[in-house]
Length: 214
Image (cartoon, rainbow, N blue to C red; front, side, top):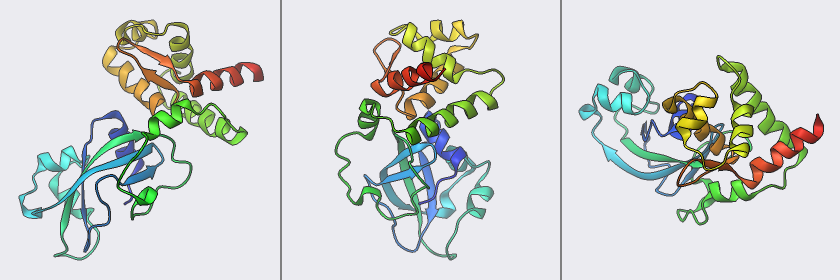
């Protein structure tokens, strides 16, 4: 099951929870992991639906501007079943190209949360460091002002501080700051606390390596 980067990032941010696909046969099942460039997307459920009952609201919920755009994106043969796929973000790094279908991981039992494993993994290879550094640098380059590395440093300096207060330090509203931290969390670099955040072991190690390289 291919998922465009923009859609995967929206799933990571929690703003998209459903996708629609036209397949002759069901290609995923509940518990399937789909590896994308934004991290792991988890299939929570899949049910066949009536495509004629879908509306513009359904399309927008799936990240498309209209029902006509959603239908235009359907692959396969007219008359094949249309599936409603409910999804959530499982965290993690893709570690490669998006999974092209079938059952990622080969089982429906998700076992240990991949987000937990990733956050705890501080055994960073040179390739790991290069990959994550590139992603963070791109986040900074695409924003109006650099924020990714600054946010990691800020969370290290001020763990368990309200998101609104941390955002204020960077001149960001809470509703802007929190989705950005979720992107860092998707890389396994931060952990959410009852109040605020802290760096994960992986995030701590990354900053240590960055400082030692300067």
